[in-house]
Amino acid sequence: MQKIAVDMDGVLADVYSQFIKMHHQEFGETISLESVYGKTESEAFVHCRKYIGTESFFRDAPLIDGCRNVLEQLNQEYEVYLVSAAMEFPWSLSQKLEWIKQHFPFIGWQQIVLCGSKQIIAADIMIDDHFKNLDHFTGRTLLFTQPHNILREAGRHQRVNTWNDIEKILL
Image 1 (cartoon, rainbow, N blue to C red):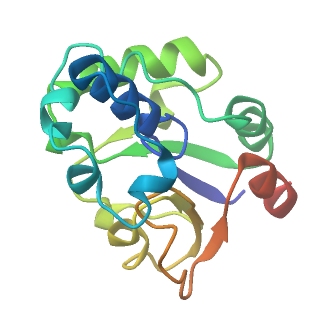
Image 2: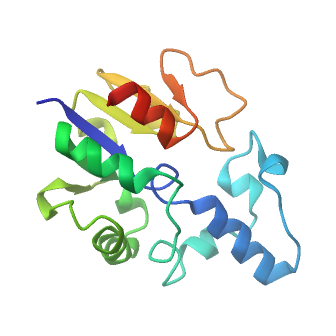
């Protein structure tokens, strides 16, 4: 059975909606996704580190459309692992675990990898929104479109825009 490593933030969890919501709460202005195309999260949202540091940023992130159903199907066909470079934000560990339990009860604790660098991850397929995680990976790579990567060529990675795209490719 093939192994799939699935990133959390930006692939399963809609962190951009969190950034936009928190920016609006702090400054009273609404930022469109289009206005942050090609910018890193910290370039697009001046206080992104502050937002990430809140006790609910990761726990309250909404799901990206379609991910739950497709991930559940993938979990029946593949060995699925949720992989997050969570050690960059160690206070997020408990939030991420709560979030996974709430949204993906079919994912067991053995399928959760909260790590530092993803270079240690060995799987057949990796789904991620960051080149820094995909570029070193030796298996098949699916680049999940997010504002920070939308203007870059996918290169050797296969770009996917939605979970419907992933379903068509892998199921």
